[in-house]
Each structure stands twice: as C-alpha cells, then as structure tokens.
Image (cartoon, rainbow, N blue to C red):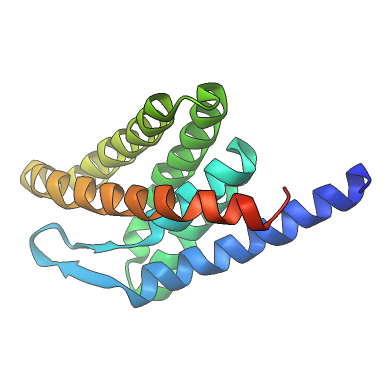
Length: 166
C-alpha cells in the first residue's frame, strides 16, 4: 500500500471515529445539573483515535468531537472550551501514547495525563462560565467521564489493531 493510500485510510478512519465520538457523546449522556454540564462517552472515541492514529488525528477528533457535540446538545456555551479541552486531550494522549511504545504502564499514564488536562480545562470552563464552586463540583464527574472513556478505549484498541492495518 502506497503512502497516499495509507493517509487516505487514516483520514477515513479518523472521520469514522469523529462520528462515533459524537454519537457516543450524544446517546450515552448523563446531565449534571450543578455543573451545567454532563457525563458522556465522547472520551472513549477521542482516546481510541489518539491511541490508533496519533496526536494529529487525536487532536482533530477530540477538538471537533467536543465542539460539535456541545453544539448539537444545547451546550453552546461550552463549545469553545470543549474544542480546547478535548483537542488537548487527544493531542496529549496521542503524543504520549506514541512515546510510551509497548510499555503498558506508560500507555495508561499517557491516557491519565491527557484526562487530567481535560479535567483541568473544564474546571476553568465551569469557573469562568458559572463560578468556582461549579468548577470544583465538575472535577469528579469529569474524572469519571475520562476514566470510563479510557477503560473502553483500552479494551477496544487491541482488537481494532488486530483487524485494521493502520
């Protein structure tokens, strides 16, 4: 397979993961009233993209997935924050996962660092949009959302790697 075909295959797979990220985030959604946000499964798609395709596609799937999900879910005030928070999550997860190589401990660490950055971004988003109390209250739910997404990604990625040559 030549390089342009491989790039096209990655681009198509990234577009599929972007769509899955939005669907996961929209279908599996639990509103959290005291933070004006929600818990959803968009992080699973973002981390899958980052782990399989690397930081560039992880950033695109993360940022655009978070942005579009907020726009169609009625959380437009969060859209620019989600672009940044989930974009950084995808960037860091992809970059650090790539650096981790085959070391499973380092791979989990890469995802946890990316999730932590997402949580920090949403702490500031909630604090700016509402108040510091909302920012603090959102920490637990955002950690939960990230960890659940990571568990799903860690379980699914090995199977995808076996089936799809990227």
